[in-house]
Amino acid sequence: MITRSEYEAARQRAAEAIRRAGVVIRREEEAAIAVADFGLGRLDAEGAQILTLVDTDRISAKVIVLFGGQALPEHWHPPVGDDPGKEETLRAIRGPVYVYVPGEPTAAPDAAPSGKGRHYTARHRIVLGAGEQVTVAPGVAHWLRAGPDGAILYSFSTTARDILDRFTDPDVRRETIVVDDGPDEGTFTEE
Ligand code: ZN
Image 1 (cartoon, rainbow, N blue to C red):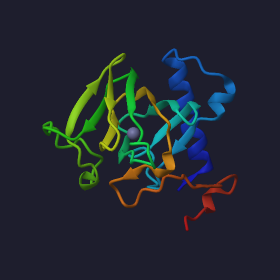
Image 2: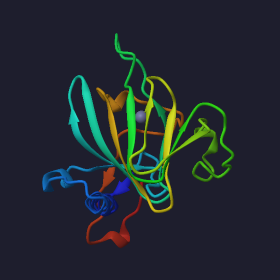
Image 3: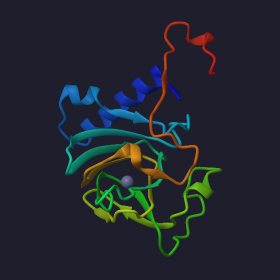
């Protein structure tokens, strides 16, 4: 879980980063940026800020903001009924962003967030600079991490069913729980 003020700060920081990158979004879209901590409660290390531009029964497009060093945990998009699962193209607007997929491991021992290596099993690194992209096939595990200055990318895909995504880390919860803090923040205790 994260606090309301953490959520709001991350949302505003993401909106600013998008604006600075020259991507035009409307005010109401800024307000709709979702902050995901994946239930892990350590947003700076593992999390993502996501603006859904379109999401229909057939296609989806999102802008994903990762702060410096932030990792989007390893996951894959499983088949649903007759659909083989989400096929996703990741295109960097601002890099570098490191995309990890299965394959020949890249020598980068500190690639995953500290202490979490076992939940980040894909070790072949693809480096995306601005304007570069990669397409991830349905069912293929992948995870992302921003370089030290943060990253912004597009995710273009077939229909997204985020809630059905599968994560390697069993502690991941796809819904972010936000707890109120407010004026008596000092006395707030986490349950
Ligand atoms: Zn994905």
